[in-house]
Image (cartoon, rainbow, N blue to C red; front, side, top):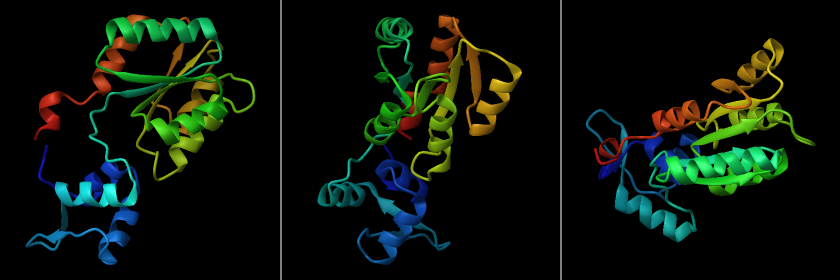
Length: 191
């Protein structure tokens, strides 16, 4: 892992916006060094100290946390089996509706959300918009899933911020390849 992080990397590690990091640095709460070009850099040990002191979880951003959101119990169980058997390096959690998804996004802090569109209460469109409109979560990648594939649904969910909309029943090989492609390689994490 790098010894010095940029403000954006620091914000990602603390799961806050870069503006928040800048305010903490300006107030002297989070000590920073300045490069010859006038850019702030934060020492990893200082970020870890600050996180411990403030009760903030420090994230080693490995790109391996996935939240699976689906109200269909059978589909959810199938995806969990795929993750257990074919993606053992991934941490994953599940949510069965949009409200629970919002809570898990805040607490689990996924890198990727596999999101069903049609759910009771808060649907996938609203969940995706909420994720993409918040500075703390806008970097989370979203792949939508639906049994109701239509040009209108694809257009709406892409407009809300999803990268893809996949039709159910899912091509499980494609899901595995997509999840693997979204992960950061281990050697990139140590640079």
